[in-house]
Image (cartoon, rainbow, N blue to C red; front, top):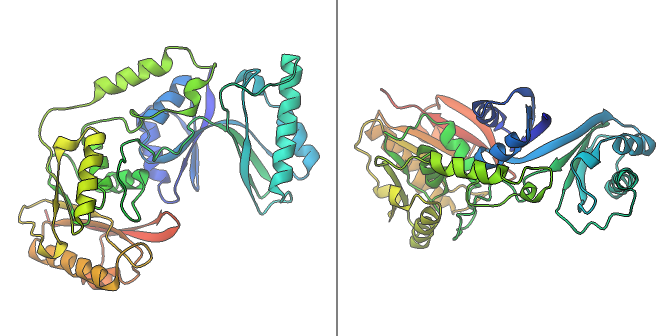
Length: 372
């Protein structure tokens, strides 16, 4: 049986996540701000959760309609086939958002949805619902009276890979880090450097991409407990993911940070991700970095005032990046920052710019392409 699935994303990463879904072999229905809707079976839910690097979560879409009052909402939700997914003992909690719609009270919307679902399921199962079994998180959006309701198959967001043992101040999310790599033109035969590596997330994600390690391999998902999945499906897809990892050859990936605690955290995180032997982390200021190798690439999330670092630290990094590009015209630099005058500090316009959000901070991903 095929379903409509929704992969939610951070604003600006829709095209990257769409490409990932297409590479998994699934048909895209539409792409909107923050989400990609596509078709897939139960195996698609499993593969999407295991393999999507830049999506936030995978939702099983139950329905969409225009609703302008609570009676419309109640009747629409009651008419959906919840019994096809949620068993008699399924536990379901309703959460969501409403924006520019006639229905504005979230608690009232949640109560109406819950009441309609309970009525539908109790009629189908001909009994009360104990809600003592697996969890089926219900998520809805109500945007300009268009109501969309889904079941969250993921649970904790997909950025929680399970390898982040040690954190540093203001770490970048794993999903965004993977996107920065995907949006560059780095490949595993080129030297990759992050001179402000922090806890190593960008470089760890790069190594996992190079090794074809499924990002969701070392964590669990909410839908693994659902009765609707064949007993062996999750086990089979996990085994296939494990077997697809590529271990041959050396990777040229180096991370530096002025903070020794960050370097130690990066080493521990890399080991937990299974790529500890592929990465080299050292304590060093970016001001001392030299990149003599032609065709090297820097991908970095440097300090910027809204996030972390003093004005002096920000200035040191900016001057160092400008120096590195001046010293090595073949060097490519990809940097995400909220600094509005970043190009002025670099002394030239970026080849490409992309607006992204690092948490709630609006940033730009500046892309400087080195000469071939």
